[in-house]
Length: 493
Image 1 (cartoon, rainbow, N blue to C red):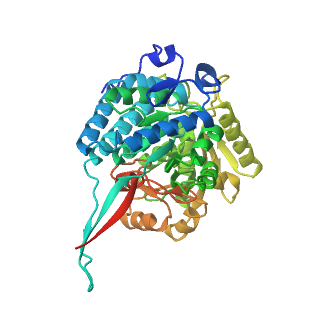
Image 2: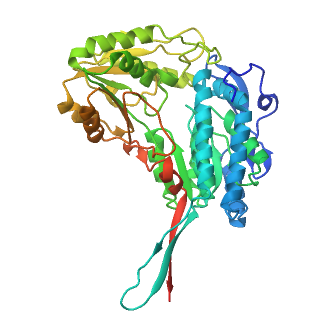
């Protein structure tokens, strides 16, 4: 794979009108309306995507249902489906630079981060391609006193699956859902966030080129409260997988009650990071900074609450503030950029409001705290000392580069501090004491714990959260089970 920065030459996708994929047709929205696609580093409109709504969703669901009922995908052998998925992974690699360009243009992510993220996304897609040949049930000897039986279970695809993806890492999020859905044998409707449709549409083109049958992958672009809501309410959608905010997740639960569709929800977080006195500070300080400033804090498990053992508090806060002060902020296409823009003017305004709120709540603003630059949707990396202060800054998900730092005494108060939140998605622990590490991992009610680093995931393990951070898990066997139904068969002998 080529690790060089993508060419600034306009990708072919942007040299023609953007269309949605329904069945084997590339179509406009039924209404003819479009949504502007902005480059968040400049605010410039770079494309216009169809504003799909209920009528378009209905057409896409019909196409997916037809392909599923006809068995054009799930009745293929596991070996054939695996080969097609591996071919799609090859095409994604061949078009790596183009996809990185589209991702950077769409969401502002620095190219170094986007390139690595897409590589990992393709690796994860390959992982699930291999699962196509590893779907099986069990047999059970249940013979009782009155009769003999041969009994077994089957794993079958859930049916038509709606995949609703976020804007913070759009292609990777799409691959994380599409991989297990296709491996399970589902037909899907992929709905990208309205802000970031580009890589999803290119993914649809490559899926057809790889040999995925028409109607198995459909892509509808549009607003969440129009196209997304129509998917969640549609009576012929059997499964919905969503990544996004907790507020929207709760609305999807209500909407999905129409037919009790199966839900996987990967939602928000307010993740704690604990730095003990004995930590290797040369590693802990930059890694804790990266936990909140990576991708401009627009990560569901961003380490936004930093707890520092008292004796080390001043040193760690000063170190992270220094990193924030010296970060290279700018256009994601600049190879030297360390932090890019927020996704939109609306998100920029929201983050700045939280910074003002932190000051109003009495927290000490140590570094940053304002808009950065004259154009684009940038906010300076911000560090608060919230010693003795609690409030919305330390409880609510901001989804921006804003860190709340506070001291803690030791392991005895870790659980109380860590779990004092409605969320439970991620947590970090920095210590040389293996006992502290294991006890912290046991005490924190969260779906993921990272020790002496932050944020790595692997497709062999489940990913998801406790409490209001979601329902279900992606990754590993759990990831494909989410797109399967299990059937028990009893045969009286």
